[in-house]
Image 1 (cartoon, rainbow, N blue to C red):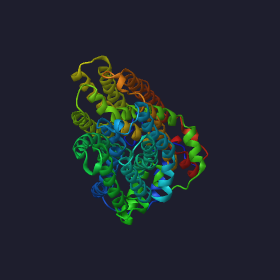
Image 2: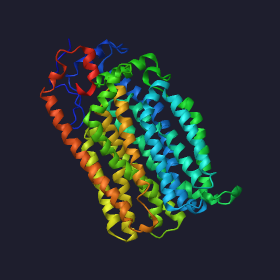
Image 3: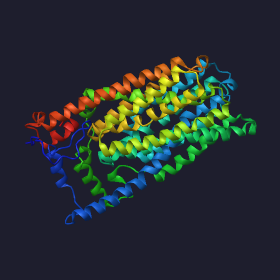
Image 4: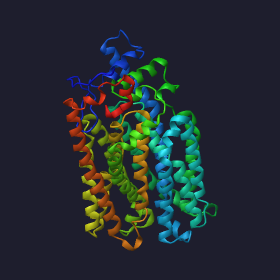
Amino acid sequence: MGRSRSPSSKEHSPSDDEKVVLEKDQTLAASNDDLYDPDAGKSDEERAAIDKKLLRKLDAHLVPWLTLLYLASFLDRTNVGNAKVDGLVEDLGMTAGQYNAALSLFFVSYSVFEPLTNALLKRLGPRIVLTVSMIMWGVVMVCHGLVHNFQGLAACRWFLGIFEAALFPGVNFLLSAWYKRDEFGRRSAIFFSAAAVAGSFGGLLAAAIAQMDGIGGKRGWAWIFILEGLATVVIGVASYWMVHGFPESATFLTADDQARVARRLAADGQASARREAYDKVYATAAYKDWKTYVYAFTYAGADMPLYGFSLFSPTIIKGLGYTSTRANLLSVPPYAGAAIMTVAVGFIADRTKQRGICNICTSAIGIVGFIMLISTTTPGVQYAGLFLGALGIYPCIPNTIVWGSNNFEGVYKRGIVMGTVIGFGNINGVVSSNIYNAKDKPQYYPGHGVVLAYLTLFLFCGSILLRFTLARENAKRMKGLRNGRVEGMTDDQILKLGDQR
């Protein structure tokens, strides 16, 4: 028979807005005792030193290369904004509506295929899925530089969305299977900071590559696509040797280290510490959980503004009266600031375990920035607003993903939920692709207004709703008011309840 849960003073660093892990999770605690312990008989100090060394090993083998992959991904999906200010639309004879439609197609295919990728990742392994994805989207990116009309660009954007769909949810899913909940945030933040670095680096790179205008009969914007696409193909090939799978199959770990990783996750109250076989009950649980939908709208509140910012910031800056090259260069500082802010918020959220408060405060900065953008025509004030907008948007993406991931338990349920949340956020990229038009410059009332609404209604208010609803739920768990859920259950049944325990 299963054990009932009772509050205990020996809680694992409880958080107000993440599922509390008490000794109420006695099933997992007991299962941890059943796992092989390679450090049996060692003192606490020796165990801590071994754990610290193991964590350094995980970081060295996982985080740098995965961050490089996302840098390439975000650079490739957003460099079309840099290409636009260098004459892409005029050279292909497109209207503003056709350009926006081509951007929208990326988000449609990306969102449709994204929820499927985590299941593929689990079945085929990260090495195969991510390597094939990168090589294929690198080839598609090269094709961007060879198109001659709207139809060619639209086809390229569609296929780019298909092949990029695996990376972002896949990597977050993968990292969540390696790290404890209070370690995941800063790693995810470092990983996602590559998006801001891509914006910063992309502006500099685009300005440099555009100087190749005329070489080989190609315009500068075409060379942006071709060279960056070729670089992606090279990184993709190397990924076959550089990307690692899940802990139980990772070749860089010894058998003892694999056991240590499993014990760390079990001690953190994660049912995913033990291998799961797929069961449709996990999909049912994911889609019956109210948190799935609230997280989806909250994430969309950050994701749509993110794409609006990353795709159109060079255009917005050019609309302030700057040349195309200077517009690309002036887009660099806001991205650099966003990268620093993203990592800082990741560390703060891990340390305080108050991800809801971090989301609320950070999104407020973005709201102020877009109010500045929409309320003045002074270029300096608008540029400052753009800067604050970047600081308020970028950190909320990884923070929301980690917050959600930490509140769903079990490999399959978590994978399904996060694929759904991220997919819903990305379909809102269709909105961001159609709200900024040249006729609206320099204040871009429709574009800035829609972004402001998403930041306020979905991100800010959604974070408040989640923060206080989860805090109330945790208070009930602390008082033992949820103990009845596991009365009379076997240990296996309790484990399958996941975060509903």
